Each structure stands twice: as C-alpha cells, then as structure tokens.
Length: 210
Ligand SMILES: [Zn+2]
Ligand SMILES: [Zn+2]
Image 1 (cartoon, rainbow, N blue to C red):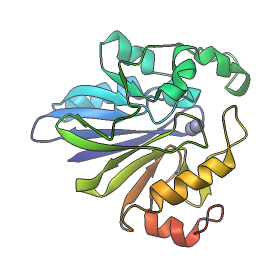
Image 2 (cartoon, protein in one colour):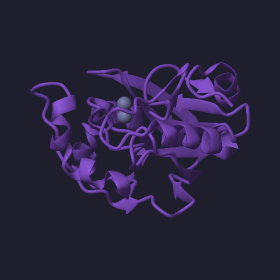
Image 3 (tube, rainbow, N blue to C red):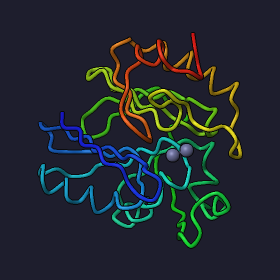
C-alpha cells in the first residue's frame, strides 16, 4: 500500500492519498484546498484511478475541494450528522477565513450504521467519534495498523469543542472507547500536524488520560 500525506492552506489541514498497488486504485481522506490537484498528480505518479473521497467530518477546512471531486463523479463519503455542513458549508463562514468561497456538494455514500466499507480494494473499518464535530469519523485500516482520525485527536492534543455541535465530554468518550481501545501500535494520522500512535497518546496526551 502507498500512503502519501500533504498539509494544505490556509490552516494546515492534512489530506492522505492511499493507493492499492495491486488494483492500481486509490482513495483520499479529506479534501482541503489544493487537494484536488495534488490527488491528480499522485494518480499520475502512481498510475492509479481515484475511487473515492472519505471525509472525516464536515468542517470547512477539510472539504474545500470536495465539490471539484464531485464534478468528476468521484464518490464522496461522510456521516449524515454533518450533512448540513457538506451541503451548506457557507454556514461556517463566520469561523472560516474571510473571502474564502465555500461550495456545497452532495455525499454519495453515507457511512452511518455500517461497520466497514471496501474502497480501492482496501477494507476500511468505520468508527463514529463525535465530540469535535457531530459527524466525526475514524477510518481504521486494520491490516496496515493505521487509523485516520480527523480532528478527534492530535499528537499531544485533541480537537476543539467550542464550534457548533462540539462537546468535550462526548469527545473524551469517543477517544477512550474508540481510539485508546485500538492496538497500541496503531499509527494515527490526524487532520492537522504530525502522525502519532495509540500508545504515545495514551501515555502523553495532556487532554484525555486513561
Ligand atoms: Zn474540524
Ligand atoms: Zn480541521
């Protein structure tokens, strides 16, 4: 499996490109500003077809390029608790960057109430991790011991809970029951900043202690 990471403007939001070398298919996790062109370059570099975009949650910085993938009929996937944010991101303009155009799009596959999906020939286990955002999702690739955690947890941090729909008690519960219960060696790829691991955060995270 090929995994490529990049951090995007305007607030350092990560996107991940995950490719299956056997099937020559790929998916990306999150669609920040600039990720559309980046994904196209990687498709060329790795001779892969993009099969889907998995969205960890509906916050504006993670979905700015989603409408471009939608134009190409790439399957967009997310949780329906963030439906309003996906379809009407302009509702977030008061806490985004002035003059940034926020364009809505339609989710093709809702990830609610299913435990796993197969994208690009890769099995992805789905966990709901609300608290930072009501529709926050975690994507766990058990065969690779990696998880894409969005803004639920960061290296030495957790997602902010002061935005609409945020709730620290809920976030703490999500982290303890869905993230700290993954195998210790699981690498955590977050929506911002460096990757970390379950063990490292269990031992060092200053906000959520076991
Ligand atoms: Zn967020
Ligand atoms: Zn974010």
